[in-house]
Amino acid sequence: DQQVKQNSPSLSVQEGRISILNCDYTNSMFDYFLWYKKYPAEGPTFLISISSIKDKNEDGRFTVFLNKSAKHLSLHIVPSQPGDSAVYFCAASTTGANSKLTFGKGITLSVRP
Amino acid sequence: DAGVIQSPRHEVTEMGQEVTLRCKPISGHDYLFWYRQTMMRGLELLIYFNNNVPIDDSGMPEDRFSAKMPNASFSTLKIQPSEPRDSAVYFCASWGNYGYTFGSGTRLTVV
Image 1 (cartoon, rainbow over the protein chains, first blue to last red):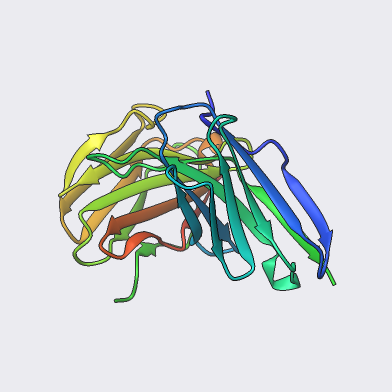
Image 2 (tube, helix red, strand yellow; image 1 turned 45 degrees about the vertical axis):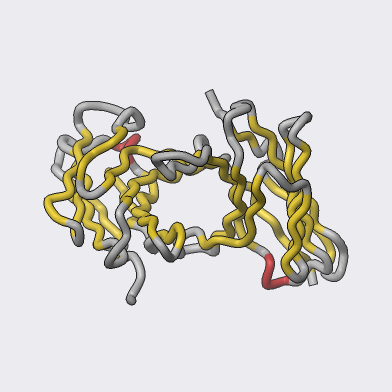
């Protein structure tokens, strides 16, 4: 049973436009959410995170929105650039004794020049 | 620090053979995680350690899989015997003061 769901396997957008990557979760105990970016032949790298006490966190071109009532978060990339083409993983955790992250399946973003 | 170091980067082996994947975490990180990435299931947590002690191995798919962490700077994930369905990319990650850091992964192909 997938507790973190990324239902769209891929997304293609034009350079300069907005990319919106969606993520849903089922475990109401999750209170910390992260996005990771992965290029081919490399490990995932941390991109941006948000705590459940916030509904928005922004870092440059990247903004993550959290809707706790809907158990939904999204990553917005504006403007999208060809270098953003990668696999994006949504992850969630509960604060506490362990730091186990539960990941979604990932979504492949392609930004067309 | 050189980051999380995994070896080998690629492994091709025949079905039935034993495979050992290796990981060196970032010095000072207390947690070490082994993940497996497949197209069907994404990134799955197999097992994780805290201070070299296995905490949760519920993600280990079968008894053919085993993991050890004999000291703070080294961990292994072993598959014996290997099967074609074990083909995937295996990532090691460590967590500590510098956050969550992944290695570059080992691409395993079992033929």
